[in-house]
Image 1 (cartoon, helix red, strand yellow):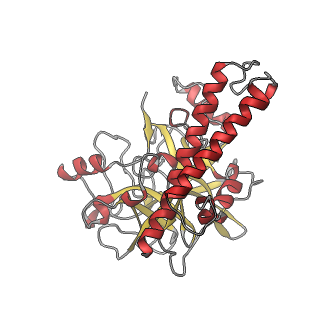
Image 2: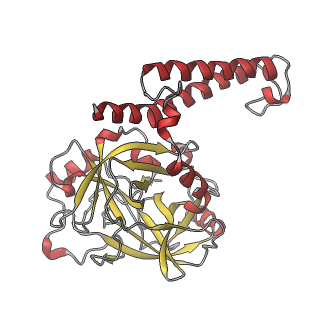
Image 3: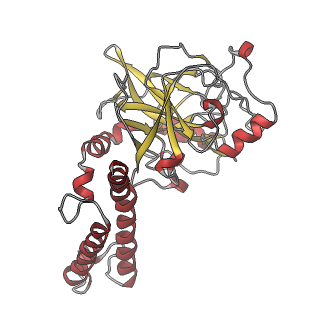
Length: 360
């Protein structure tokens, strides 16, 4: 069994290029897998996530896809950026050909990984990237409606990922590729995993969706992660999913993040006042004193939990669901509190501190 995270690492790309693997200018009829080259102006909101520490060639630096959903926000898969600092990523837009196109690169200010993301379970596979500066006249794509019925819809996935089902000898295109796929129900998809004798038991959760064919043949692959799965609604394309994972490539259904489950989270994240959240002491300056104050406030939260829930052994003291309040719950509270602090540092305080330092 091979679980394919459809991310392209810089190391893998380097190996591929050193081996002479690529798409020559005369080989543009290649496939995403079972697809075709995308029209040059059809998907203007699609972006390439790039390693900012690489050379100046966008083709070399590509590792994931994404989509502009606002002038200064890109959406992608969490597994693309889960351990990445904003300064290590650039967003390349305005070109469908990574080798010969003329695009624009912009830096990343902030990375927001969904708090429910769990790599081993493939859940919550969504992240938002706030750009250093808005894209002028940005061609953004709308999000799917939260109540949309997707099963049976024809969808289109696009990306610069591997065009060969054999991931041991990949072929990466210069030009953006697209493939049309039917969306199937989660039940059908789970049954497909069972028929394929997968070791995964009902892996498709409510925050995922599947597209493609049981027999495979058409799919996204490594390097397409985070890219869009789009459907047509009321005469326009809307974003229904993000390329996430699969067992190999083009061997059966592909799995995508179901964006209808995350619309509220996305809108809240994009509208949040991050400076106010970072300026804990409300003195108009983001500095180390805010870190100290934030830590103090979280300690108050822990003490309140001790006094009002854990020591009286009330139901609110049971954090792990075993119907009792014990030391395991207290340890869970400690872990959750530290995780919240680290997330605040990473997603709120540090980007605002960096911005303030850059303005001096």
